[in-house]
Length: 295
Image (tube, rainbow, N blue to C red; front, side, top):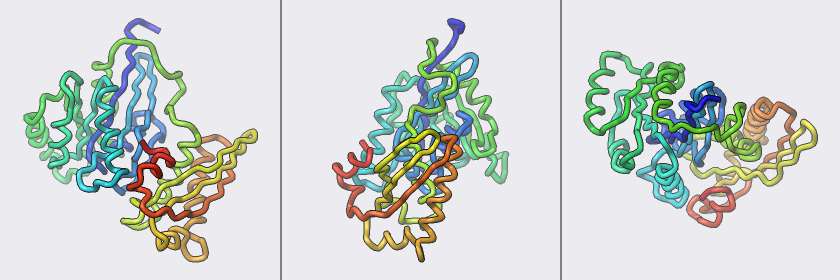
């Protein structure tokens, strides 16, 4: 490995729903962060790793910076975003093409001096009129001294090669931190919890997911078989019936979808048992959040 090899941490930040996790997965080339159309799908800092011949990129996928909801969970997630700034070499600020608002202005005010910030303009494929892109780039370029501005579509994989080449220039020279085949620093237990939570988010209504968490109570491996016992935590008793569904059909479908994805990710059979628990006010309870792995 030559002395010119570069390794560094890159924070992927932005408002909820701008495509941070989709971008992280696209750049890593594997699913390391769960995704859904609902805000606050990402609740933890997650490291996604990409190793090339010349560099190792360690992407830090962060929760969307939240300005409206102020419960303990959201305060913890916001602190997770801001504390990331001190630990990274490059900041990738992800915005949606054509959209700039108070959330972006707030994030700009928090960007640390001395850390290169690359503005990643995502979802360019959704612009009805591509001629709108250049005026938008000119507008946002005047707001901050960005190191670079790179238009991409994480969903379509457009511009991501250029983004990697751009980001690599700002990484410090140094040896790899992770092995060449590593894609994340997270455990299988954590990934199982996230996969189940993603399926819950995708199969339930608009409001319910914000009051849902997943707790892996037991994770055992016997050869290639993994036995996983998972509790779905809801905020209110009335939510339990919604999650379970008529005759248990909804929970059965969610569990089946989660199990299949776990088997693909882990490369072996999974026996998954799930049930639903009610813990009122868990999202605003510091002790409950700690027991669920937050903070």
